[in-house]
Length: 65
Image 1 (cartoon, one colour):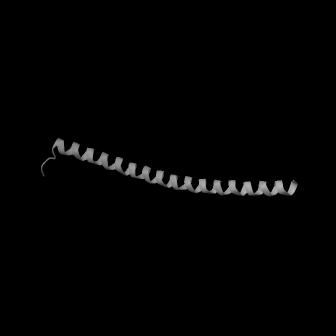
Image 2: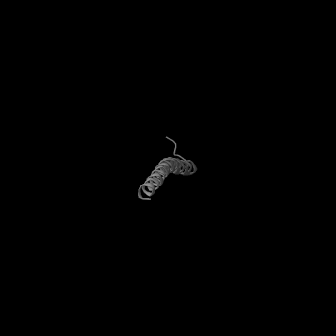
Image 3: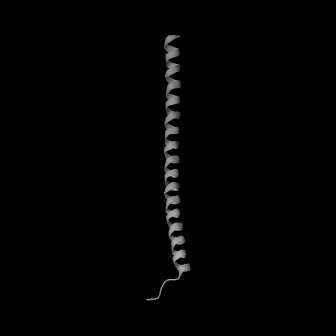
């Protein structure tokens, strides 16, 4: 069997490294997207709690005043 050239071995190593890096980038992008969705959900919950607190404060003022 013919020996693989040095250039071919280096090219395979480079391709392997690029593939691994690409997988990492995709994982990070997916995690970032998920984090953004979670942050949006938390933001909506905070807004709802803020409105609820304002209503409760209004009722309390009415009850006391």
